[in-house]
Image (cartoon, rainbow, N blue to C red; front, side):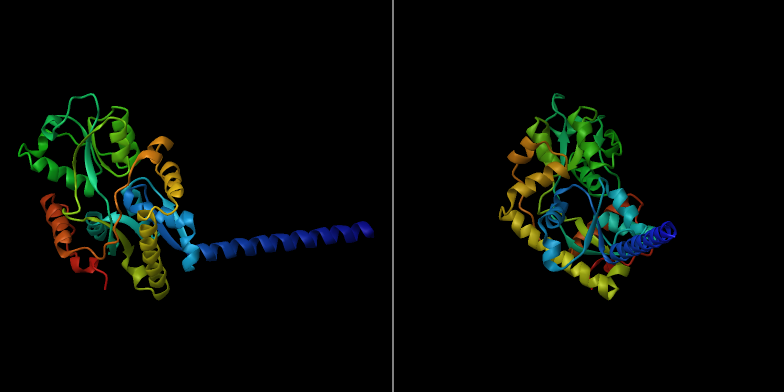
Length: 314
């Protein structure tokens, strides 16, 4: 009899444990669904988001954020198209292109994202024209492609004279240059500084006086939802708080850890480089969007029937 009671008790306890586990999984699923999903990649304009995540800024503002880590803009596009993320790091060119995939977005704010044409060391290249008939690694239809065009156009030598293989993954692009598999590459920070620290040649860089095309974007449908809209407003506030702290040198050791852990920089490089001052720009300028549209039309890649004013926050 005691054995029978014992068995029944064990069955009951197992049943309760299973129900609690199922309830816990349901609760986790609901919490994940309610969180703001942000698609990031290791470039300078993303640094404040990694900083906010690691420094506890989300908790300070009462915001639940889940970072989706990628190493290529095309993967961030996929996350937005599939509605796995509500917010993502992007640029105005790719934001316009998303409309071709039935994914309307709005630009939250522009970011600091200088792009540099870097030539591999040892090839005796000190001027852009010396890259003629050589390989420049880019990611197509985004700011690296745009700036490669702009830099080459200043020479008047013609775009077909330069080979531009597509390497979407920013870490792979940097590694291919670093190991000599590419003659040159279009790179964002902090990879430009890493390449310079190891003897590679910086040929030309976009400046803050040039069109500011890098931007954080959000799904229009998320911004039209009151709960999501509040989350995105808090995300924007956290980003600006992080920018201020990074610029002031607050938790510099944490920034170095992020550069090593998230960006893959060697510790000695992370300790030695001086990052550019980050900005907290507002909505993109009309002239910047016009530049993106003009370039896409020149490539015959501008989606039809896009109301470009929809990129502006309302």
